[in-house]
Length: 449
Image (cartoon, rainbow, N blue to C red; front, top):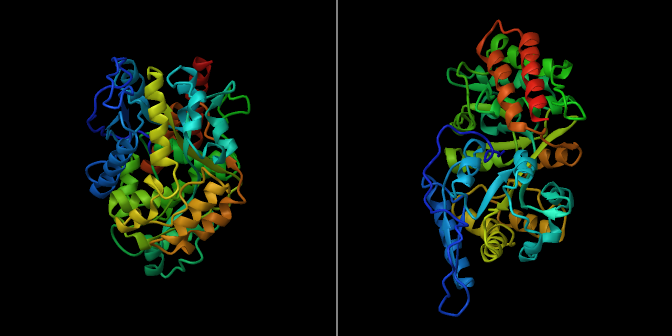
């Protein structure tokens, strides 16, 4: 989650652009058309100079192709922070177009924090090729509130180089949790600093990964009516018991508590962590942001998966945007994020910049004509062995996706406690941890109504 954009990181970098949707009167351009300025979120950080330059080049190309439109970028990381989202919107600092993770679609739409963009979707030329089930997630009462940008399911990311070093076959990655445990023990046995299996415990990421794990075992976070917690179950106990035993019996998870998204990603990038749950974009982030060796990583299906947590993100538009700003915002989203061979799909440029091209990290277009064209271009420009990801692709096609629960971030914060409990205390009582979390979750759900 990615993904990442919806998860809580400790640091929030400064916002580099001014507020959008200000309602300031437009100034006619030299050509007579109304000038419009939009702010756009998710500019790559300065720590990723090549990606940031590519973004800036795209901004310049877009402005040249759209006279009268000025684009200002913000580089806040993560792009979406649920703690600051509301105040930022209320304070007039929200960008014209911003990213929302799938966990927050319902809340943002219900609270009127995104513009109804139904009349502007024609600006996205491949709109009808976006997966219908993914478009449905940003639609309410027949009105469209977002442009799906990413869709994925979870698998097992692993370091192929470490597998080889530990005497494991990287071409036959684990398919069961028992095999994961055995592989983790061999990797941890390589010496001090090596971690067989990495896992989160805080910053909402612990609860997020608990959800991934319990879904994979066939369990649930909530009852079907979303009124009560359902994670205090045999599947939930199995998730925690397995982690406890790997941490305290096998000693294959290291002795450092990994609190947030960045901590495990950084460890994975160091080349000393063997496995972690994650979507294919983990490979991209590990290489681009945490200096991982692009050739070392592969991904396979979720062990023994009965279901896989699906995730993703969408672009939404500031409800204060003028019609001119909204139209320009959708044109930017189309230009940068939905054009084959351009923007984020300029795989040739990505390869030249050293990006890990070839990772099947986004299924937002499915097997539509646009999806097939993107996949062909991705394979054509691949900078790494695409076969490293075949096990994941094959598994993802057979494992049913399962959406994140409602009030996901609140639930993840509650479930962080059970994850940190088993990973930080050898004598942790799993039954009590789950019972306490269940009580808190039920109270939260009752308060939400």
